[in-house]
Image (cartoon, rainbow, N blue to C red; front, side, top):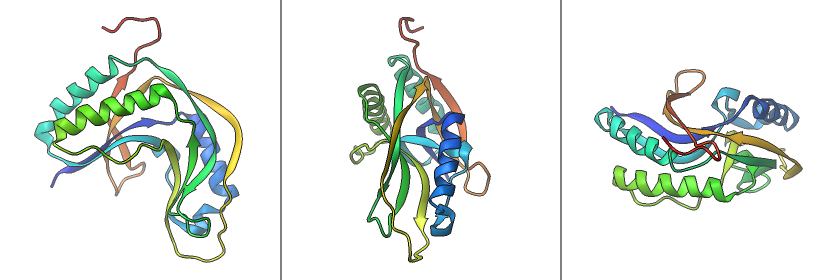
Length: 187
């Protein structure tokens, strides 16, 4: 059986504490089956799913080439939002302000990796950091979107993650791809 993978941007420790605080403030453990561990927090760029081991090395080479054509950048975390209705949201997440550098990396990964994977292009990209998912079906939750002063985080890499559902943390970086530092030529 093939292992499962995704490509994503891991979140720095400053976001871990914000996510944990919001999980507690909103009592998300009471309403959701899955509360990600701080080390598992990320922005998904592309979910790959099952993937044969013999294709892993060529995929890593594609991702390395992509990283060589993108500069590091700053992202803004701007609040807490959801997918689904306020009474039964499927996912609660930290909102990420959309940005051109983030969209550019996502577009390159989707275009090049989907060709390599022989997959069609994915749905619209909505950058977010999931902090709760898998609604338990308990009444009494009325989620209200929150905004707060933007929190800037430096993005200098993305990773290919292997998914290990029986381990904690669940997501293990197979390889991390460093973005170019602004003003530094690619190698």
